Image 1: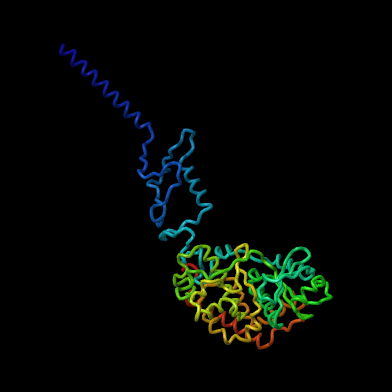
Image 2: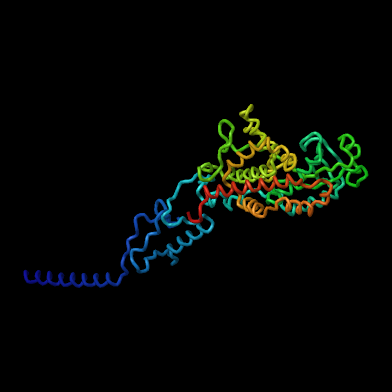
Length: 437
């Protein structure tokens, strides 16, 4: 009996030894198991980069090809996640370079140092400029001018065009135009020259296209409105301006973050943090405001923001009210209206208003790059008045009927361009940054 039990035990041991050897051999034939990290994201989400987004992607632990879990159809889940990552990055912002800290930025409020706001320290970014509403295109302006010069006026109405001496004209085809009648010819001359200076600076998108016309009782353009002309008390043979009439214009107030509690304007520059926490809409408006300030300085226009600054001495809330002769068009672009105070009459009284105009200009140290480039070009050429005259002559058939810019005023235009160019270069020297800094 004892012998049989020992034999059975020996036989069982042999069987166990054989089974163990078989299991060991089977284990070698199976592929090695790879443990998945505990923080692995769900299969239906794009993998996230490490917190902070500063360091490079984690390198594989082994130079061998990583283990790929497969779904029942044999598709690689890791490959699918990679495709999701690429698809998400295609429409989103570019990845930050390694080592750059990720900053929390509220939606729609970019930081001033980001490329989306300013580049080079003093120029609005191209991305921001592209969001500025287009206003009047060159093609639209050319088509309107051609039509307006030959259009028959069938009605003249009061209101809607500024001063009581102006009229709203309706043409035979139903379109409308503001007809401005100057108290003296230099107002119409100044408005026409201001329009062509805007064209020279690339700012014509903000200024309604303008054509000149002579009021003649027997002329084809005015023949149907003789009674209205007599009621307006316009002098026969007067030169008036026709500008495109825009419906649904709205008032514009100086952006709230730009003005202080006492109504004064804060400096506008990228380096001092004045652009921080601004909404995208505010920034797009400020791009247009900086163009307006440069334009009004060059034309010595005192009948817009400068008149508000003048009124601060007795009306501390004036900056919270609508800005004179500035409106927003239906598409959102700022429209610079009633520029008849510019260049001629404005130059005649520049000494009175430059104590407001110059500090206003010097408070701005961020510009639209295209506008700054035009200013610097006119500064280097020292021929601004000659170029303005050529443009005026080429596009306005009635140019000879109004005197050209007088020589002292031509010199003043060049001096103001030189002053503005010096200011832009000063801002570049003080706040500018080289690429990559």
